[in-house]
Each structure stands twice: as structure tokens, then as C-alpha cells.
Length: 358
Image 1: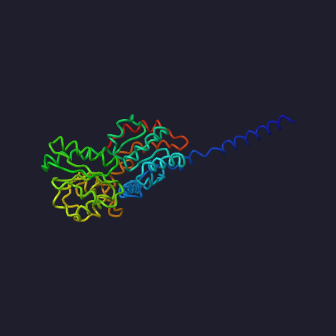
Image 2: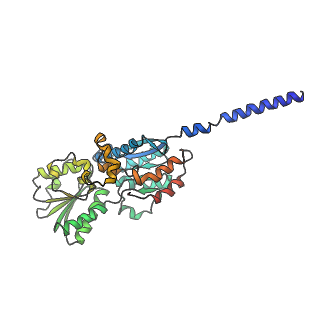
Image 3: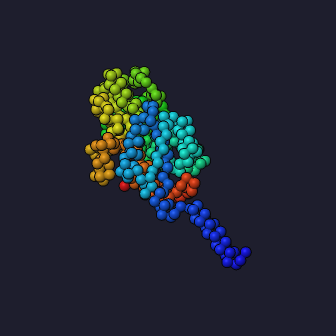
């Protein structure tokens, strides 16, 4: 073979190899134009007695994404929703499904505190970050080390009920109160905060009744309320406050015994379906439409007429919403992380620096 042919052959082989190598990699412009969607696992309650709260979570998430055309920092968001039914065991199963089947790099939710407790060990094991709107379990988590992969973007149940207990004793002048609260973590902890503050201010909790979360009729519990109490504290969530207050009214107790309640007893999400039974109830609830600060109004109320989204929907999803999730969400999207190359330490480093509120 002549030198010319050898040079020609080598050049041809080199050219073919170079072409094959280049074809294996997309053009840089194509990568920039078609970033991989950002998968976010969304654990909420779509069925069961807590579904009203889950609906508000969905409304809040929908509001956030609609205002941004379904994008975060130029990346399309793929929100993978799982129904936990308010069941701790199912919540853990759905968490495993999001991580192992859908390969999500981050999750938000769940709705109920006892669900988050059930998921805690799995989150520690897999180190997939969870940003939760659940009230932090102040009592149940005392025996656990702090989970560095979980960010609580809401607070605790007693944060609201503790000042309500103080108000009941010092301002309303109540001396004796009975507690009627649901028999699960959220119900216990909210009632605990109210109990501590009320008795510290000179009042006395004389009775505690704990109906199960799925109680169909409250008459057996209403019949047990001591007749000489000044008021009851109700600790309910989801659609249950609607049924409890209606049955309380039907039982002939309205006007005879005052009612105080936790945040979710009369939040705006369920007030819209309540009747006169809600009048006169004292609660430590979130913001009302008429009270919202102008800055919040600019962000959310413009979207409410067509979405029917309530202020509580915004409160319940701070993980996707406004200031509480901007840094983690931008960090995820702008670094163009994929499920294969997701840097968990990167997200973890951003979580402690998130500023809740404005």
C-alpha cells in the first residue's frame, strides 16, 4: 500500500471514528433547549376524612404552578401525586414508590403528622429530601434525632393552640373546659398546647374525650360532656369539624357551652361549606380573606376568582409556594439535576438557609 493510500485510509478511519463519537453526544444547544423535567413527589390525602385538607394542598400547588406556567427556573415540573389516605402505613408505602419507582429527587408532603413520623426512618435511609407542610410532632419526635433531610415549612400544632388556651382563661374568663379532640398525633398535640396554657393561666381541664379519626357519629361523645363546663376545646381536621359542629348544634349544646377550636376547625377552606353552627366559635385559625396583607394579596388573591383557591390553600403548601421554597426549587432546577446525577448534599445545604415568611 502506498503512503498516499495509507494516509487516505487513516484519515477516513479517523473521520468515521470522530463522527461516531460526536453523534453519541447531543449538541450543547439541544441540551440547553430541552432540559430534563424536574420530578417532584407530592404526598397528600385525596380520600378519607382528611381529604378536605388534601384538596387545599392541591389547590395551593396548582396555584403555584399555574402562575409559573408549570415551570421552575426554565424546567418543566412533573408533579407526581400519591394519595396516602391519611394512613401512616400507606404513606410510607407511597413514599417508597415515589423514590424507587419514579426516582424522584425530592418530595413534598404529607398532610398528617402521624404520616410524617411513619416515613421518618425511610427518609433517613434513602436521604431523599422531604419538605413538609405537616405540623412538626413536638412530642413524638423528642425521642428521635433531628432528621437532616426534612424541612418543616409550617410549624407545630401547639404554636396556635397554646395562645388560644391563654386567651380562653385570661380574656374570656373560662374556668373549666372539656377537650374533645381526634385520637391521632395532630389532635393530641394541639390539645396538649391548649391544655398547658389554659391551666398555666389558672383554668382547669376537667375532661378529655378522644373520638377516632373516622368516627361517623359524635353523639356518644357529646352525651359525655360534663354539663358544668364553661366551654369545650375541639381538635378536628379535614371535613370532620363540619360534622362535629352540626351535631353539636343538633344536640342542643349551642348557646349553652362555648366552643374553642384548633387551626383546622374553621379554616376558610371549610368555612365556605359551614352554616350557622360555626357562628361564635373561637379558633386559632389562619388568615381570613378580609385580613390578608397587601403583599399576599398581590401574590394570590388575583387568582382566586377562577381557581376558588382559599388563603388556607396557600398556607398549606408553603413547600411549593413563594418564599419558603424558592431557594430549594431554584437550586434543583438551575443546576439541571437529573435523577441520575441528583446531588443530595447540594439540596440539603440549601434547606437550612430557607427563610420562612416574606
